[in-house]
Image 1: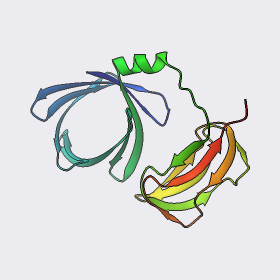
Image 2 (image 1 turned 30 degrees about the vertical axis):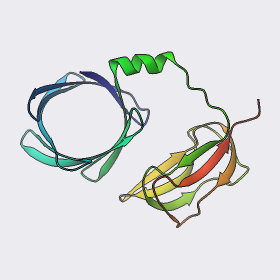
Image 3 (image 1 turned 90 degrees about the vertical axis):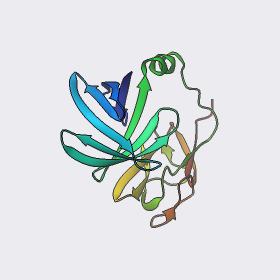
Length: 172
């Protein structure tokens, strides 16, 4: 199966994945092929051996095409599309209307709040920074608009799914 993978909207990579046996895979990333042995060891944990090196990866699914992957202390926010999903995603423009509520993807501690209620913000502008799994994650506004609500404060601990802020689009 062929996929297109991108991290945080950066340049995408073409990935081909072919199962060669039980738990054995041939992975080709931008033309370079490696052979891996991968076994699911928990609900979100995979044990992987590649070129004689063993490591664990924690995978947290984030919607239809999004994944957070924790490997060796680093978290990667990935979007993965198979060829069919990529074609479908490109053919339909997302329609955003009404206030957009942004929630925490995982539990963590609010390190910084970079906006106040009433502030005019741009899409992708970082509004809140959350520390989770010893990594700081900047949470951006999903749209251009005005901050309607800030639901957290610096130093606060939040659970996954907790509302962080609400941004209202400009009046039409």
